[in-house]
Length: 406
Image (cartoon, rainbow, N blue to C red; front, side, top):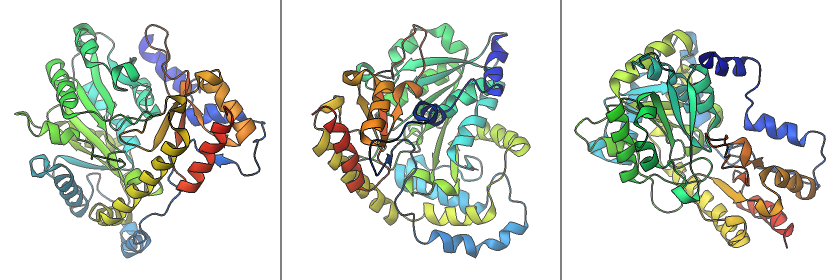
């Protein structure tokens, strides 16, 4: 019964995305400003690299052939070269076996749950997925889609906004049932970055209890100070290299290209063989022109520098406007603000108030998290704000919100 409950919830629409829930919350309510500002979705509003359309047209002839599920040699080599430049020569991967192109990282994060469950003997017990809490909603879809139980690992200020690995290590029976641990760094929505030691400890637990460590690194190139460490970088320094770890990344955030739907999984070659076979049965291949353009985008870094500088300007604006209000701290990575709205009654009431009085649309944190085993939802008091507009618009939106408490 437990194994089908999640599937039934998905089938009957009982599990809704945070965007759907926010839309329903605000449905029929007029914004309190003549110029509403949408700050819910992590959908970059600034320019994409200008050469991308030409690259797509260059390869238009590839639309006449089925692409391979493993992608082109050129794309896999371009991704491998980027990994080597970004994380050092030691982290370089084998483009033939240790990289799998994806139609955006989200579908990979979902489909990877299937081989994660299939590869391990759970001795008749229901498998679990270990999820940071709050979390990217695709992780829950993957959990329910594979008939697993979700175990929510609260990531709060007290734990450095990452799951508490010491507490997890004290639950060997739970880890024996674990199929995978989803870890996002920089974290969505808090912006916390996992240190090399943290990643090393998480990987050690995965190997000790034979579950997969799935590192969602789609915000890896959006940071304001030091470049975040990556899972492959840490794993490459261990004797077993990429065993039990797969990282996911994409061009959506790095290159302002969410509409291209281009990402990759990299790491454990044996696991990626299984994932490739599952995708060959169930998932669409990346179109040839998209592969051609993606290879060019992974090879070019100047536009990434420009994008990163733009986000720094937005966080500078947040620093100036917010100060220490709402528990604000400049995050180490990502492009979200995770603000404490307990003074306005919590995240959901604050979202309503901010929309009705300011015309700024945000997401209640309670929609991005879930009640844990003790009935605690760590997102209840918070809202998430996506800094996807230009710095001037970000400043205006935050000034409107601050005026509520002036």
